[in-house]
Picture 1 (cartoon, one colour):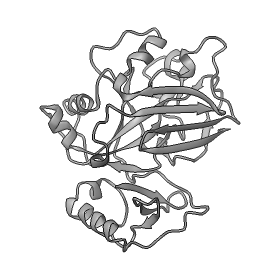
Picture 2 (cartoon, rainbow, N blue to C red):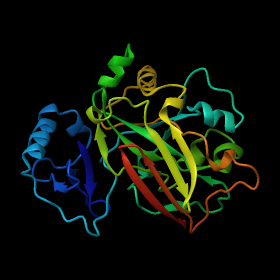
Picture 3 (spheres, rainbow, N blue to C red):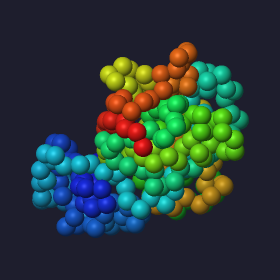
Picture 4 (cartoon, one colour):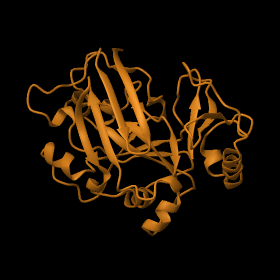
Length: 285
């Protein structure tokens, strides 16, 4: 299933994109799409049955904003340097264990919402990423099979980063990762049954129409199953938590000088095979 949330920011309603590409209203079945729903197999079953029967009301998508596909996100866990080609382009050694950092859940915005370039920023960068959405509470998972069984679905994430804040201003990466609007998510949460192999997805990103990233999740140093298993040994993962799993080569930081960092007025578009497409216009904060 392709689950999404539509409407003005803060007042989104749950919806479903059916197999024919028709937008359907879920608000008569469930109050929202969140961790509680993802952990409720009976509720998900009712949605599947209603979708298959064609009984869900049709929504007019004209002019309708698409919000983040998930409400009340508990935490956004991020994995850095998780693609062989990205490590090479930045001159970094492939890590021996996953590099883990966090983004605050309030960085999450809709897939087509405005991204704000922070005040004083000169190195705002793009990163297309596969987001993993947790569907069952995960603690100390023992195998890759067990890890994947705890995944509710997948989505497109844009891990916007300010490299000067991240690398040159001291401390951890947090200052360059948590600026307002720095995690567009969606358009859909695609349930795991529709993604049989998360290591066989293409990822692409364009800036002002120029293709900048063209990668595949096959390049991940630590695959999705290992990331979920590993992280569960350091923190409890709850339904509705999100893991951003890293970005392939092609970021601005890895380009020759002068590096083409983002500025107000730029347009970024990104997509992951089967998971949908995003488009953001950048403006000054």
